Amino acid sequence: MHLFYQPLISEGIDHLDGDEARHATRVMRLQKGDELQITDGKGYFYRCVVSSATKSDCYFSIIEKIETPQRGYSIHIAIAPTKSPDRMEWFVEKVAELGIDKITFISCANSERTSVNVERLVKKAVSGMKQSKQSRLPQIEDITRFDGVLDTEGEKFIAYVDTQNPELLKHASPKGDYTVLIGPEGDFSTKELSLATKKGFKKVSLGSTTLRTETAGIIACHTLHLINS
Image (cartoon, rainbow, N blue to C red; front, side, top):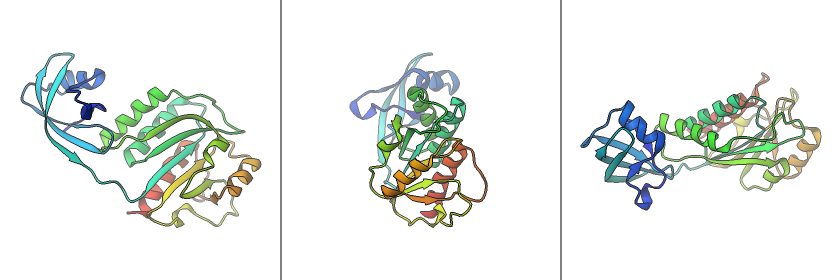
């Protein structure tokens, strides 16, 4: 069953909006009496039935509300945006498919971009969430100064290209609340690395190869899921 997104369903909103409605009625050709599944992106699925449908509107009635359990760990990736916005959109969609709690875009000394289109990135996250049939939409934060993400709780890691670095992210403890810093193509500056380690971040490697920024973010997210699987 195709999954739709309506963040305000718990507040009594009984119809799909915009692209969601058009997809339901024009692509899926849902009609009155058809069942559909909706998520609010906050941990709930709703089994619903179409009450009325036109080319631009899709109204529904709720049959059942289903709560999904929280994971026993959380993942926060703080990442420097790439020069190409397409690559960041791809990153957001893929980590949303994997499952992630929070994404923060950070401004670094070697950053290639100082702005992001949060609205478009949220749409990509919604797409990834629906594709993987998940019920929680990740929180996406706009550009934040590098030092603005350092005061955080839980296990903290900074991915840094260093062939002499023996510590691998895969050695992280399970069931943690993780924050991983991913730098720009030019990596973090030595000053940023020093500042992060003083704030309790552990310098870690994601493997023996040099990864693109967006690939590193996906690998970090997937690695933490594997540790907890």
